[in-house]
Image (cartoon, rainbow, N blue to C red; front, side):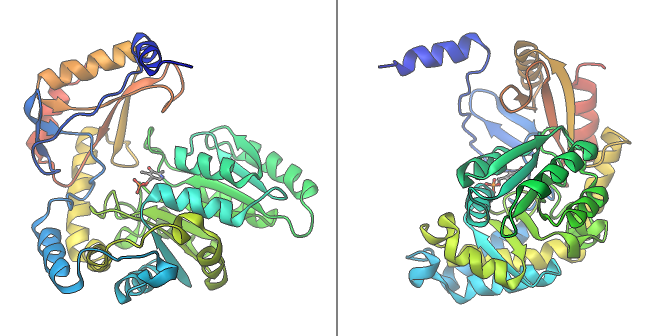
Amino acid sequence: MRDPGDELRELEQNGLLRTLRRLDSPQQAKIDLAGTGICLNFSSNDYLGLAHSEELREIYGANVQKYGAGSGASRLVCGTMAQHLELEEALASLKRSEAALSFTSGFATATSVIPALCGRDDIVILDKLCHASLIDGARLSGAVMRVFPHNDVEKLKSHLEWAEKKTGTDGRILVVTESVFSMDGDLAPLQDIAELKSKYGALLLLDEAHAFGVLGPQGRGLAAGMELESQIDFQMGTFSKAVGLSGGYICASRSFVDLLINRARGFIYSTAPAPALAATLREALDLVSGPNGDERRAWLRQRIRQMDEDAESAIIPFIIGENEAALAASESLLEKGFLVPAIRYPTVPRGTARLRVTLSAAHTKENVTALQKALPSA
Ligand SMILES: *Cc1c(COP(=O)(O)O)cnc(C)c1O
């Protein structure tokens, strides 16, 4: 039998070994990293700086007192509390959708929803750079999979032409893409994709993980920003990034949501999120979509523009190339007091290892200026 030690040594030799870093402070712009000390954090997805905000800490604390710490069962057993339903109603209304369903994480959402919608007789077509959870969801579904090169609408079109001929009258074609791509920070050509999916009678699942709270009016996402919400069959996202908490969601028609309640295994066989969390998420939606969120988005936009005038999101990659070189650049930044992760294969394609800077409304202008001085010059 294989020895795990050998596998770990092999990972290490290839510059691929990952280890956990302990944080001795809350999640915020300045963190206390074990072995390093105080440094500036340019690695979290806490885009609006809400994770450790006064606002959310206060709301969360009060909700634990009011609604309790645990939910006790899965949603279909006896875990559906008023707080879960109220969260889902508020989310559906914010997203201009008929209904919504929440999950314990974005990962659980993707790996539960895609297999609930598609099976052997169906076809799932994904962008090459889709998140691991979407790929795993498609694999788990047992559907025939097709991948198009990143943002290549011509290739998507030819996959759709093929799929339209191949599927029977009952068969589903599901196109899966993201609004902001997590390792490049670029956007999907959503208008073109929405037109194509309609033309070929396919469904579209859009993962707004890095866009919800950040882009569009009220931070409603890229689909809202492009006035395409009504054309997205499944608006997916996470509460773990800009919203500053945790959990995942899908917004869809009432009948699709009812189908998911019956079929999505990560929903059926998993204990419901804590009622205090659901209640806090409900209030966080008001915060994110209201004036407080607008202020935070304006501040974040200033930091993004300061870093890179052409950036389309809060994710700004610096491509280095080889795994070791990216790791060395990241280590050197850490010595100077900046946490900027090196992203390596298999998260990104071989030869495109990079530093990935993520900006937050929690950063000050001075924080970003300091990082710019410390980054390897282009
Ligand atoms: C982070 C992320 C997820 C997973 O969401 P979690 O709530 O962290 O599990 C899914 N899709 C994309 C594109 C992501 O970036």
